[in-house]
Length: 198
Image (cartoon, rainbow, N blue to C red; front, side):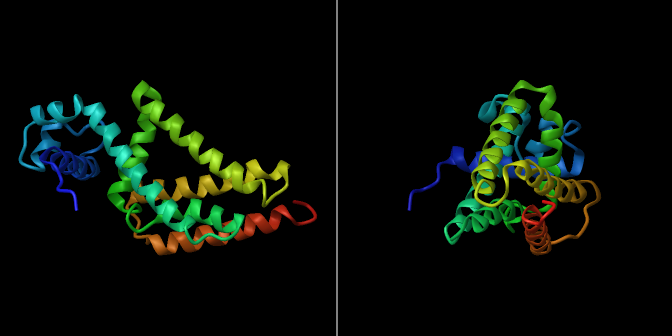
């Protein structure tokens, strides 16, 4: 097994410190000194490893997106049908490794700040494009063309709503319960898509 470099260890420490400090203080309010203090370092260390607070925030979001991607790939490994693949896409958002109060808080605050920063907005566009592509690919096998965008919006709204609720209110919804609900919603909207009025 390859030994982890000191730089990579410090990088990971700052990412986890950012998640905790942002959860405690808020995305805009938290300072580099407060983040660095979580790991016994100085703000200068953040500049050394990341260049700026904004770049640290981008690196932290990339870390969460990697967790999401891994969860998605793991679920796709056992998917047999288009519906299984769509379920893998939405359930990955509530993977045990990803769906935590700290992660929800950072995720919501990051995307809320994205319209005001080119760097953050660029990452948002990439992520939105990736998700939309996955939805389109699977839904073309599962629903009539006129209903696909509606299904995508409904599923995305549920996912965003749950993450926002946990981020704002710190509600004790579990990842397992969220996965159960998104499965039920998926079944419902897909059955509606094929009803006489769908």
